[in-house]
View 1 (cartoon, helix red, strand yellow):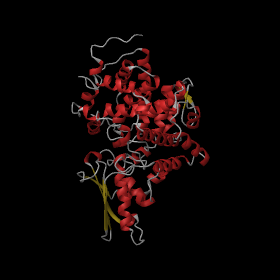
View 2 (spheres, one colour; view 1 turned 45 degrees about the vertical axis):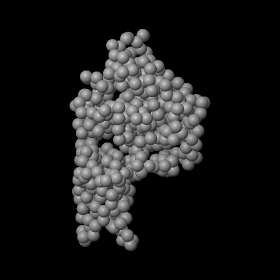
View 3 (cartoon, helix red, strand yellow; view 1 turned 90 degrees about the vertical axis):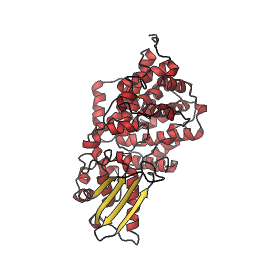
View 4 (tube, rainbow, N blue to C red; view 1 turned 180 degrees about the vertical axis):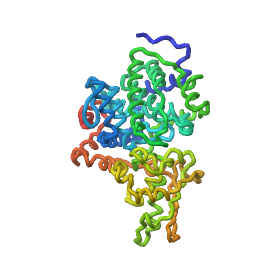
Length: 463
């Protein structure tokens, strides 16, 4: 099927501009620090996805694959096979299942949309390690370019930026894997826009479907790129057009896309999570630990019964996206409850996957009673702080108090996690599932991805 001629000049559209960059990107153009970052983010994704594949919340995804009876072309993390599109769907869902995957201020969660799409095609297309990493970098870049102008605004309105932007990031990455030309790549992005959707009502009343948004976006990106390769076309003004996503999803209130074309490798500004919680809560949980440590100087432990109130200051727009729920009824609502997580941190000394997933912990009367005494409030961003800052003031029943401010959460680009932090997290999430030897083999394989050779052993280890 030949591509139809568009009335729009390709190079003058945002999709065309992205496509030119994506199609021309070569591994040797990517700075070493960016390659290193891509390897770390890949490792981070693989660890949380493998653990996420064991959760009961993802069983409906497996049921869907079984119902579709898809052709076993590509491996699924944790076992099983499916078509490329549905392998991406499953792996994206697994990766987002723990709420522990990477995040980006301007597009939501890029890793769980981009990496599953690349991983699915990597096996089928027999690509090299260098091609693998290049596609990941291209996908992250495209997802920020695509979503950055409207991400903050969609958060206010209630659209899910990851689900909207993820289709573009995945399409860009797969276009790179498939070796699409500029016109095909632009059309892949344009086609992907037809799947841009998703609301955030889950942060008000819970519901596990949020975890599936990443898989849906990744699958849609694979399909868009394959359709573009087959000759399907899309509206090349998908971003900036009269009925494009910028006007529709932001209600015509969006940033200038040019602000994102400043030469930044956007993958470098990704936030690596060190709590399995929505990102708006992380700095506050850090600050809570600091304030508790101040109160406990001298070796006197502070218990839930000792505490009168825990006041938590976060930026205004984060209140509905992380502080609306007090008493969770499922794992997802627990991960979007600043009050519950704060109480959990005091009572159990941690905010861990096992506790968030446990119905008995979620219904613990001591934790829930303290959650009622956690008082989130909107606060202006203090000087020198990131918008994801957190402030905490603890007041005890005997009149003692302590406060702490965390300017940016641990794992944030302004307070970065290092390779050793990622390796420790990787071991922590995989220890219940793999031997130390198996974990070490994966870590070693991830360090050797910069190769011209295909990746059968690495893919086998993951699946």
